[in-house]
Amino acid sequence: MTFSLTTDDLLERLFPAAEPGLEALRRGVEQVCLPAEQVVFRRGDPCRNYLLVVQGSVRVQVLAANGREITLYRVRDGQSCVITTSCLISIESYPAEGVAEVETTALVVPQPVFDQALGDSAEFRRFVFANQGQRLGDLIQRVEDVVFGRIDVRLARLLMTLSEHGAQPIAITHQQLASELGSAREVISRQLKQFAGRDWVCIGRGVIEVKAPAALDELARQSD
Amino acid sequence: MTFSLTTDDLLERLFPAAEPGLEALRRGVEQVCLPAEQVVFRRGDPCRNYLLVVQGSVRVQVLAANGREITLYRVRDGQSCVITTSCLISIESYPAEGVAEVETTALVVPQPVFDQALGDSAEFRRFVFANQGQRLGDLIQRVEDVVFGRIDVRLARLLMTLSEHGAQPIAITHQQLASELGSAREVISRQLKQFAGRDWVCIGRGVIEVKAPAALDELARQSD
DNA sequence: TGCACTTGTGTGACATTGTCACTGCACTTC
DNA sequence: GAAGTGCAGTGACAATGTCACACAAGTGCA
Image (cartoon, rainbow over the protein chains, first blue to last red):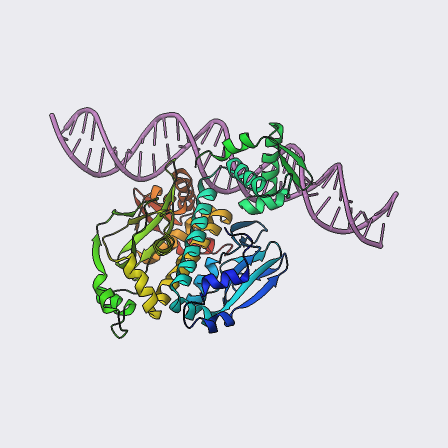
């Protein structure tokens, strides 16, 4: 993952000035700034643009009729979205929903521009496919977790990830954790209470503090 | 889906003779015949070839440590595999396993040949991405089913699909149905017994006959 | 024919996870 | 302070998965 990526860096990487004929393409790309919570695409929407996150994070999720939801993966700095990519070419509609989690800067590449760049630049093709592979791997991992994984192990893993990347204590509600894992709030509440009973975490309102990362980590590593 | 597809048809479509510079590519493609039950790729294997099914079916699945498994999707006549495609370029290893379900004829396209064809032929790019989109859609649908779907609804849907495409009665074991849905044999056995109790199906050893397709279909349509 | 063996299925007891219907608490707004 | 809102706790129950068996049908072989 690349931090402090500028739009120019990304453009240079995807549409190298050295390659002839890409000048027009670079000009066909537009930069947008999505506010936090902004829905980027909805299920069933047609795909018209290739979306590339410069800085920020787009959460891709599926919503159920009864209110439950699950996060499929995230598109972060310098990454692009498989769904967008594939649908763009195959003219299908989005099978999921994308939401900007924080204020997000993205490049919008219209379909014709994307199409031509794909033909013109080997570097661009490599970038697109590499992203596909990563997102697809995430997705298969998600299926595996959901089908075979225990909820306590998955929650421990999630807490470890959150505590590594963010500040302690973690500011998150039980409902948000449940949505991340595709589970129900009550289940998460019960598990957290168990963890708290073992002094692994300390629970507050909308806040969780990891007290025993080693113990959580050991649980998280079960059945890798 | 295309039936009675010949290797020549497929080659012509992917590497049109009309397009210059593809002659060499057409010669770089090799045809293989995989016997039923043959493992095509294993989890963790590096990807070296782009695989294209001419005729037959490759089941892509994930196996759990405790013996449970789930089918992610199938690659059938004239289709190609997302996993292969993505990993090929991003140099990742397979995150799942592929098995030929029946005797399957496939085209093996070595990575350099694939790479060049991708640059040379817009038609080929479209084909590859269209396949990506479809497989990805399948995968997201699978996540949704597994996370939010009820097992009776999913089983009914599966039985309907099997009875539409194949001959009656359906020749399949409870274990195979469970593997398809990522569930456990006992669960499937119990559900089938329920269905049998309502005279929706007739159960034999390794055989299931659908007696009331309308009833199954109604159940299958719940929470679409 | 009889016997071991494999494979597919039936079943009860129990564990885990999800659902439902509540309750209460903390914080905000009026 | 009162009312409203969002977050968390809880018990009862339903759905699904796990485990440990039993049993039955077919297969191969002595």
